[in-house]
Structures are given as C-alpha cells and as structure tokens.
Length: 410
Image (cartoon, rainbow, N blue to C red; front, side, top):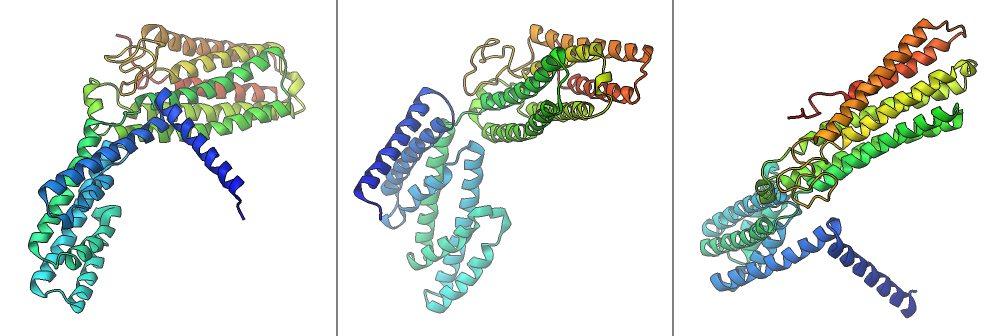
C-alpha cells in the first residue's frame, strides 16, 4: 500500500514537473508554451461560449456551446476548422434524424430503437471522420431531452454554432506559431549530423588508416541518420499543417514554402546513405589483404575530398536558415516564431561557400581519379578499393549539386 509519505513525494514530484513545464513555457517557444497557450485558449473559448449561449438560448441547450468550443480547439487552425466542420455535420445529421422521428412517430421506445438504427448507420459516414460517432449521441440527446421537437433541435444547433464560433475565433485571432523555425532547426540538425560524420571520417583518414572497429562505428552512425531524417520530416509536416489557413503565414509576407524542406531532407538522407557506403568500403578495406596497399597520399587526398563534401552538406542544410527575409532575422541571428527562417534565399556568402565546397570536391575527385589512372596499381584488388570510395564521394557531390534546390544568386 502507498503510505502518506509516498503520496506526499508523488505530489511534490508532480508539482516540480508542473513548475518546470511552466518555466520552460515562459522562457522560450516550444511544445511547453504551445500547451500552456492551448489551455488558456480553451478557458477563454469555453467561458465565452457559455456566456453567449446563456444569454441567447434556453438553459436546456447551453451545455452544448462550451462543449463544442472545446472540440473546436485543436493544435492548428487547419485542424480546428476541419474538426469543427465535421462535428457540425455530425450534429446536423443527428438533429435531422431526431426531429424527423420525434415529429412523425412521437417519443416511444420503439421509435427510439428505430432512430438508433438509422443513427448508427449514419455514424459510418466516412466524410465525418472521427466525429461521426457524434451522430447517435446528438440524436439520442435531441430525441430524449428535447422530445424530438423542432424548436429544441434548432436551439441545439444554435448552441453548437456558438461553440464552434467561439472556438474558431480564439484559434484564429490567437493563432499558434507556424513552426517555420522548428522545421528549419530540424533540417539544421540533420545537416549537422551528416556533416559531423563526414568530418570525423575525413579527420581520421588524414591522420591514420582506420581499423574495422572505427569503420563499423561510422556505419552505425550513418544508419542513424535515417532516423534523424524521419524526425525532421515529421517536424516539417507538423509545420505545414500549422501554416495552413494560419493568419500568421499571411502576415509574414509570402516566404518560401515549407515544402522546400522536404527536398533538402531527402537529399541529406541520400547523402547519409552514401556516407554509410563509404564507411562500409573502409570497413571492407580494413579487413582485406590489400589494406596496406592503400597509398597514404590517396587517403590524405580522399580525406580532403570528404572534408569538402562535409562543408557542402553543412551549407546545403543551412540554405533555408541564412539570409534575410521581410520580418525575419539577419544572418546568424535568432528567428522569431511566425517568420520563415532565412525566408527567401541563401545570402551571397553562404551560397558562394556551398558552390566553392562542391567545386573544390569535384577538383579533388578529378585529381585523385587521374593520378590513380596514371599510376601503376600493382597490388591485386587495389583499384576496386580506390574506385568504390571515389564513386561514393562523387555521388555525394552530385546529390549536393542540385540547381533546383540551391537558389540562384540575384
């Protein structure tokens, strides 16, 4: 059994969690602040809906107004509107069924049974989504509490409209952030992870010939890039939904669409897959009989090539964060919620740096490939090791050299 001491500890622990939650909500934007704001909006919408319904409608239907206001409040404007429309559709179907049976067959046990058959059948309507379960609930309430009378049904519909109106009004005029910043930060984390892996491989190759254990660790890190990419994609999708019908997006002045982030994430994910192939190639080489034949000058040159690909990946992932857009922040500065980080296009310095990294990597690739073709590779199996590693690096450069994803400098 749980004693008073354990219960007291649980209460204090929970109180501490609440304080930390509120503290994070006050200090910075994020999920905590969104949660607190949603609760505040719920209180405001419920009080407003109940006050209006109590003033305008009979007491028997006022409960529907605050209840509907709560249903209308969702995490995004788009979801709030969509769920409200579905709920009103479900209420309308239920009210029509209740009024139809109440005014024709009267209020009886057998008419209620028939009503429920029709209401449960209507609850299978897919366009109503999750709100379709409200059809039998509304039908029973309107039939039992209102006797299926038309006046009561109209008052009930009016209460629902008041609740939806209050919920949507609070949602629209106190709109949630569009999460542009969260999406850009997710892309930034992904590019940092890709860049970090390629940089670590480059640094090690420049100093020594890595063993199988290091190569396997790199392969494991490259495999985890797919998980980071999936999380980044989910964050961008959340931002896209938050931006739909959001007045903050209109006021922000027509910045780049969040859809651009998907292409950047897909590209970085493919770069991660090629980095995994590089790690596997090095792992295979470390375990082969020809590993000692890998020339030191090749590994040093290849390290420089990977350093260029790492720099290109980092800058490629930052292209939606740097630069200045109307209402945004200057390069390197913080971007407020509701503004597109880096808005329009990469600033000149970053864009030139990205092109320089890609072009530098291509020059190193050509030099390494040409030198290896000129030299006499006497060791059996040496060229396949060179060729596979060079091909992987070349594919990474091809992924990052995408004119459709890199804005042209004006």
